Every structure is written in structure tokens, then in C-alpha cells.
Image 1 (tube, rainbow, N blue to C red):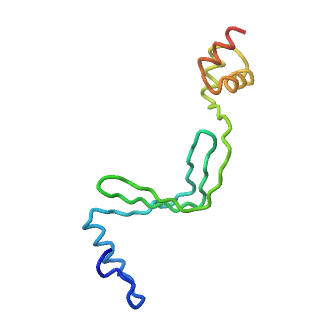
Image 2 (cartoon, helix red, strand yellow):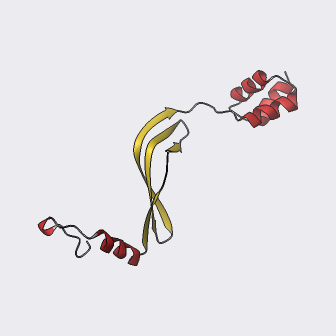
Image 3 (cartoon, rainbow, N blue to C red):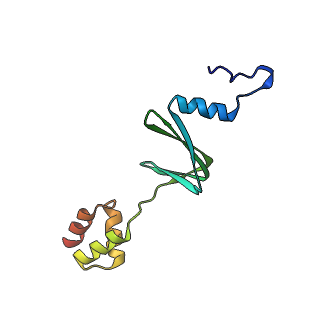
Length: 120
């Protein structure tokens, strides 16, 4: 594909020359440093990639991320932020446990949890 890159006689392309060619084509590649983990959140689960090496390639203004590491899929459980629990407690006068349960029952919907507790 690129002249001088071939493996004739087992020779590869000089990394500096490759970098120069990529720059001329408008391709920039950089590695993110000190990445501990990457989390991809889906509707049903989270994919957690630990010991991640992340490379960003920018081509004509578009960024592509390449992630290499130890991946595992973790089923998603409903996460209720402490601020939401506090707000429901303040609005309804219920205990923390009651507010948390109402938020879980409403799948985290603040308004639905408050209405459910207010009409009980």
C-alpha cells in the first residue's frame, strides 16, 4: 500500500518515516497516558476494560479510539445517586431507606418516586 513499507527480505518501514508519511496524510496518532480502566455503558451491562492501553487516531478531524486491555462484562444494577436520595427525602419527609426504595421502584425517576411517596 505504501512504497518502502514492504517486507522484502524481512525489512519493515522505519518508524520515523512511517510517522512522517502519516503526518503528510493528515493522520495523527497519540497514546493516552496513565489510563487505569475504560467503562463502556450499555443498557443492560457495563463493559469494564482494566489495564487499558488507549490510542487515539485523528484522521481529517475524526477521532478513533483503540482500546486494548482485559475486558469483563458486568451486569448493570440500578445506581441511585446520593443527591437524588437527598432530594426525595427533602421533598417527602421520608427516611433515607424509604427514599432509596422508592427510587429503585421507579427505576431512578425522581418525579415518580416523589409522587408515589406523597400519595401513600
